[in-house]
Image (cartoon, rainbow, N blue to C red; front, side):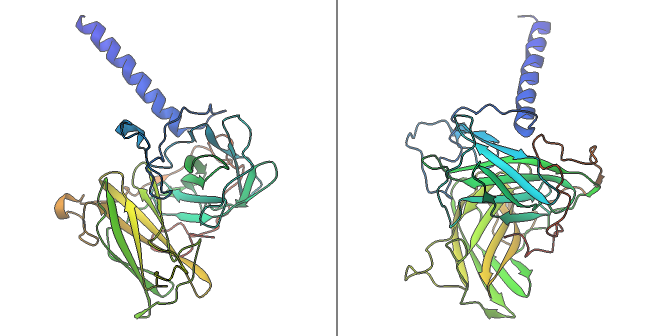
Length: 348
């Protein structure tokens, strides 16, 4: 094979790869249900494992990276101003109307801005036609990743994700550096443990208020704490819950809540801890680098010296509806503060 032929084949291969990658990140029309990729088969959030140990490692994708998986597809819909709406279609192409209850809810909707400077966890309500609706959790301009975490009746536990753009001037914010403590509404939450890539990691978060340990945490979604981790860059989604459960006779109601989580790769992650106390749910946020002890800081043991997104101003090309097809027609009414350093309102 001569050099020209080789280069031509290489260029065609690159075009195919980039074309496929673009298709995953953009929703521009009806989505054909994907083949069985089993991306959640080893997701510790759902307690499932591969039945076939010979499955290729490429099949072990984290949650939230696909808009369609195992025949189920996440489809945002046009909605009135201030509302977010979507459906999940099943392998038959019809909207799914029956769901299992998982962690006290049939649907968990998590949204995060692409620079991880905004986070919301809400619980939509479904209509008889399978349309889920909720007050828009998209707090201001930017590209947001919306994650639907659910289990269809008789189906697999899934987390599907899709990008949604809210138009307007965007001031990208750098990710805060790794730290062992976060404060929210007078509470201090400390983090102990190491995020180890590719294996179970034990993380303990301890809650105090005005220097006094909180020993009467209230159950929230069937637990004393609720943790989501997102990987910087592609926003791979890790949804875990703590060891033990309220009322089991062995799990104290604070101050410490311990989680077992599996980080899929080395890299920087943003952690969001929801906890309930005094009849209010608050969110504490942390940056961790997989493989680095909590609080070791950038540059330690090979940790990157910067963990944020370069600050710049971006003005989306659209001026009205979000740019992804089927996304809400008007979602610009903020419902939460998207700034870093102002946690505590990322839940519902």
